[in-house]
Length: 484
Image 1 (tube, helix red, strand yellow):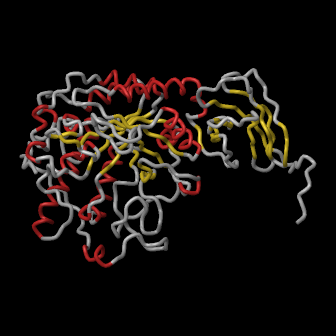
Image 2 (cartoon, one colour):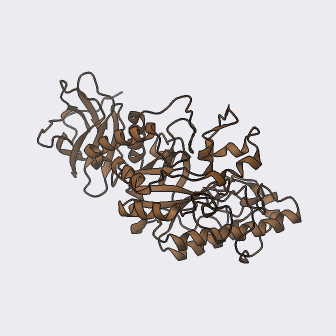
Image 3 (spheres, one colour):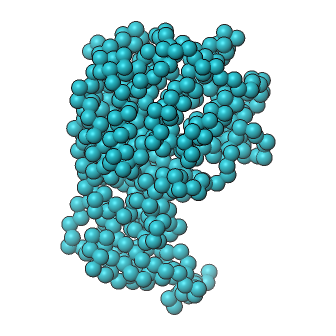
């Protein structure tokens, strides 16, 4: 681990001491009870302010993992690293000293944040997340608190500032990824076994606080923070410190959005506190996976962050195994929105700042689909109609229109729809052709067939719009319930 000297003396931050014995004696993941928690969830239920409503309505986002690890491309000394590329420093075949000198070669001459932002805009992204610092500790902004930052690389310039400016100009909100875990910081510890560990960790906490405050001071247009590397036992003991720091950061930017990864509660639980309540503004547990049902989300706000190959975030020159198609990714996007979530697709630029061609192709294909069908994504969410095998429902939060996003075309051209009680289908038509009115056929109480054109060659998922209203009558269409 590099012993970098700080550019300035660490600021002293005092917070109340927290009893270690509490962590040692209380079991983790306590079933939902009514424990009195000082550092658990500070709010029950969803935030209802405008900034959170904006977050809720994004639909599609972009994640960018970038740092000095991109220079290795997932290889070292001719050998292939099968793990996530940004973790290569932890590989037993990657010499730590050699990795820690990579920043001296970091000079991404092709880095063009305006081009990245334009590509994200054309894909349809409404927000983006950028790794300001990953686990290796290399800071992509000019930090006063470490020499291990971009200003001491050959590139020598701020990466984050121009990126925030470029994405802001395209109308895409920026969120700052920050790894609490920091392999380069001398005070960092995985666990606190001795008094020496605890003393060193106090310096680490001050350093962490200083860098986070610095980021918010330098980039005040950022809408939120996306935390990572908070699973260590040492951090799980920092309920008091993390709670105070979160309050300080929220005071700096009113409405700041922070997910469920940051704080531990009184007993060291993350994401959900010891009473089972969500900590933070939205759930961050959906990484490279999606919930299957609305019940799985527990009614919380959430987003899913997704890689294109199975597990590559930073740049790896050699993708192996299954690589997702744009069709798969569009289905994941629609499924996320149908369950009241956002979908965030990851990109890993190479060491020169190039977005790889495979990712650029996917971005274009997703963007082409979004240009036609974005009304089914933006400002849309869950509809409590029974899901059918043809695809997914989404419903606009703005005007109540229902969107049927069809991935599996029935052979007979009839889309089965089962509504909630006391719903009238007023008007049904293809999103691409609003003048073509489709006439639903009532087949059971609250159940219809909607015909679609069979001679149409569907090459991508398509959308049917349903305009509906409610009635006080429980119309059963003349159907009598069977007696058994």
